[in-house]
Image 1: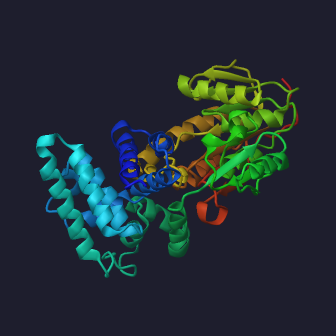
Image 2: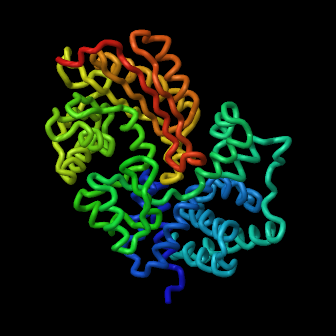
Image 3: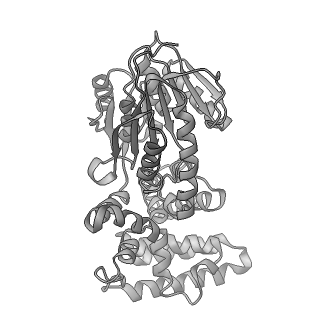
Amino acid sequence: MSDGLPARRAALAALRAVDEDGAWSNTAVPAAVGDLTQARDRSLASHLAYDTLRFEGTLDWLLGHVLTRPVEDVEPSLRRILRLGALQLLRTEVPAHAAVATSVTLAGEAVPKGRAKGASGFVNGVLRALERQFRGTGPPWPDAATDPVDHLARTTAHPTWVVRDLLERFGRDRTESILLADDAPPGLTLRATGDRDALIAELTEAGVTATPGAAPAAVRAPGADPRRLPALAEGRAVPQDEASQRVVLAAGVTPGDRVLDLCAGPGGKTTYLATEVGPDGPPVTAIDLHPHRAEMICGAARRQGLTVDVRVGDAQDPPIAADDRFDVVLLDAPCTGLGVGRRRPEVRWRRTPDDARDLAELQARLLRAAADRVAPGGRLVYAVCTWTGAETVEVADAFDRDRPDLVAGAREQLLPDHDDTDGMFIAVWDRPGSDTGQ
């Protein structure tokens, strides 16, 4: 039986990749745990890595109660071990002796031999002090009545600026509901590329619990490992959150439509759009600024047997003919990405209010450029996987004022508590006129 160290080493490797290499956890964690031979170790490592990233800010705040120096002054390798140990002490059923002992071992391994004893002693002292201080009483949370922002920030592990932004628009109870839902792992959602019932039957036969989602092609398979599903490798399904699927549904594509997908990588929406256009229609034109993301679109299309016209270029000045117009233009714009925090929990700690403001300016420019490509009778769809006011309603409202030539349609903010999806904002405009030909 494993002593738990392999799982913790794998979790620590994932934390290091996110922290030092800038990797996203949804790729770093599977890569780190993939070589573990025991399913129990893979599960533990994944849980510890994701939750340590998710609760990083609160863990640092709690560690600050027992450290004699600021958390940021602790060398990164030991800081990660302290966070991993603190998570086990304060948010899991792991026995305290196991959480401390394994952390001490990891500390000795993380530094040169000559410093191993000192590093192990430091980690041992901090974690034992943490366990003693909060045993039985729990953390000293800020008062909810007098300081609701800090209370929610600490108890749900979100930056104060994110909490404040939500409070201003949704109120206390709904904000707490959103933040708590954002802390819950999402499970796997698939989009069936063919017959959904057949896909559910295939998964069920393979021992996977699979049920229909709310979207017509969605399948919920919360406990499944996508790397072990033949349906994904063979193109019968793709991992795609229901929020992303609903963006495509909002576009209202009909067979034969000319479709332009801007900022299209990695291709989940592009291939769904192509499916809606149908095999007899023109290829979807997909544009992305980054060559590696453009190649991801090509790969997704190949796996699903679809033809897509993929081009590398800036969506503000797309590499298409100046007079080209489309029946549907989708702009899935670059954003803070806070809406995918359930699957990439570290995003909340990487973003700042300045990021939201700067990205909103870019989104406005991209949206104006996208609007110029909509044919008479066509539709423009704006989507961002976030919920900040600056990037969602403020961008859409400003566009309404700037572009009276388009008629505002449906507008929706999907959120993880009510919708059990990513936090996706979708806005639609239609251009008057019936001539959609070229």
